[in-house]
Length: 434
Image (cartoon, rainbow, N blue to C red):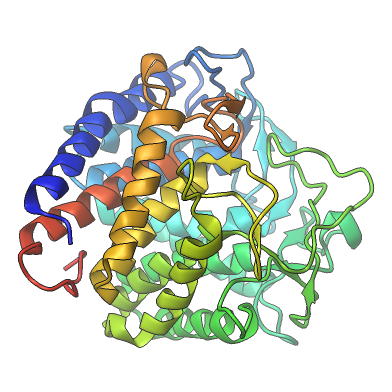
């Protein structure tokens, strides 16, 4: 088991980096003081690329991130001011006053250039505005979280098969099938809806929101995970039959456009995404007042799969995608999986009490700090690196890569390390969010 000195060392390194580098980089460089909202396109040197498109996803994630940082006690009030800047720009430009819900892409001034209704974005409307209210008390936060929730319940709920429709046109009609996604569901959107329902229920305490949260947890655990190993399928038919995952044609800001709908194998899974599900599930349990042990076996199976096939025990870090049933031959490592595995492995350690999860955390933490963090350019992370840590895509920010994963990971990691430090002489099992 780690000693106090070992935990203290990694805690101090993480906190110093976060407070002195990562958070200031985004607070200082991203706000658009001319037109409102945020700019997020930065090259490997931390310099603006000149691209000024403002995706809803980027703006709403900045709202969440600045709210979350302020709520956690960072920024000396600046994060609250920046959260308000995000809320102002979002409310002025993205809400569909005729049909409800959030449009997808605007230009720098807020003029809409894509009016699609993307389910992934609707989730974040609920999540971010709930967090904004909890962080600042601004009544617009609660109002817009509840209006977003109402739009989702009216237009996205699949009353026939359960769960949510995901890719829609401006008037909420489903997108075309195939690469346009109108005939598919994903674990990704349902996981983020669970995340959104959790913070919504934390904000309101309403019994209906509690039921919704319990429903989405049950759906994910019973319909979207492989029974043999507990890992997640990526995509499904509307009735939750697993499908080989394809890249959708909807513009995410940077993803490659699919030319032929080429699918990944059905047994493909994302260890980092699975671990993200595990820690978000434990957080939902905390908000619901359900014992974390209720989901211990889910967490164990997901974490052990990541340890076996996701963690690179030779070079460090976690692979982006692996087969569910064997080692990967694709060695790329993306920034956001590292972020989520840091949190998830600390939760697995405190919940399950096995030192192997702490060692997995150390593995990813060491790889991140030695290979993926671009400290000379301000401290944001490279998007993608090869197995040895050489940058493949060296962008520090773009249309969906902002500081949502990186800042949230540091906040959550610091909180867990502080709790572990306070209990390290005792048997693991303490709730790191207590």
